[in-house]
Length: 197
Picture 1 (cartoon, one colour):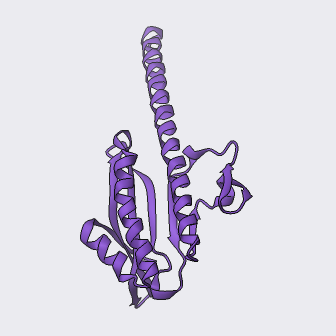
Picture 2 (picture 1 turned 45 degrees about the vertical axis):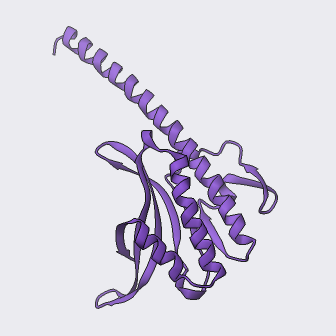
Picture 3 (picture 1 turned 30 degrees about the vertical axis):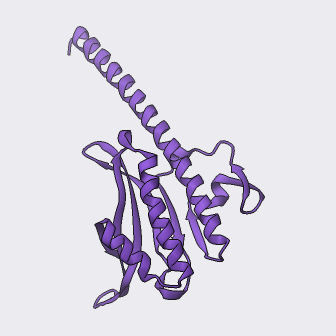
């Protein structure tokens, strides 16, 4: 390859590198902002359910991103925590009765056709099944609550949907009737993945 051709190629590669780095920086910034908002709002939901003795857990665990002055309500984000490194936020029901253990709201990023998307699902256990070679497995299903490309994510629209789900989830706990939340998500949202664990 002649020196002129290599110089031209090197120039084009440098320009491409600069453009892609700018895109990645912008995407990471937006993703980090969304994750920070999700963590903060999921923690507020955790606190509200905790007040009626409903036990949830949150992932990533609060010890990684929060510093507590008085647990659980007086807190601040841990200085230097990199929200853009987080790919998924999850609020998980740990209630032992009615088969609720594992019911959760998950928000995660995935790539489709080179575009980053945010998807929020309600995930729940539909029961157990015995498999000849692997034994008993729990069957989980997801209902898709919200899905949008990263550049079109509208947090207000997402929370309008989530607030309805949270209200029914809360009511299902107060009435001690898990079927309320399962029926609500099945009737109002598109079915997502089904898998075993």
